Length: 287
Ligand code: GUN
Image (tube, rainbow, N blue to C red; front, side, top):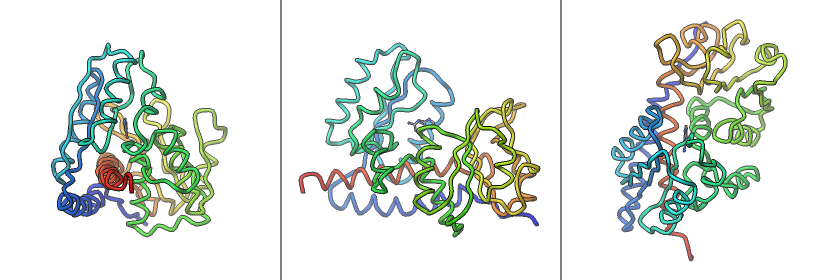
């Protein structure tokens, strides 16, 4: 049995259509949603990601403020820029593109962002709310994956889910979101023993390693009818690839995401959604 493709481009478009309507509604209330991005250094992949985020904002009527900073910027200078964006009433969402250059600390940086403008869901405040089932702004890739499950009506209750990632942006927020849906979640990482056995037992595998020299999820490692969400994107043998080969995995899976065109477009769509949420929050302050 060949499985069903979870098409990130199609599902992302449904999210964008909803965002477009919300933008019109906010504008009618005199609010023009605005996302400020901060890109530090010359990493070409990060520059492409930020460019795509700007383009998507434009498509739905969200305005953007673009801060491109030199790779040698100090933590103190960066803190000041974030502080100014926190205070700027015309900015609703703040996104500092990761990873950061070596001299900058990720926690120091992201935790400085106002929780109300934290469209990445990375501040301690928003991470805490997520762990207590009270999240308002959630990291974009995890919420995009949940949107994919919703779209295909994939029931998560009681399912054995193997997560192969434990990062703040992907694995940890996903753990909470999946647990809220009553799934049994196993968070795996580079030190996990018997990963193949754990995968073989999983109803759903969400993989985000991003290095084919270290890890490939093959069809021998999954059970018949499993759902495979491939979050990774990296260059391998001159091609953009995920952790699995979609054409191979879909022969055995019930659902799977391609790379590219799977999770990637969802991350961008959910950023737009979070920006709208942040703009709505700005109208509620003081009420
Ligand atoms: N780098 C890779 N993915 C992301 C993301 O979702 N947000 C930010 N800020 N940086 C990233």
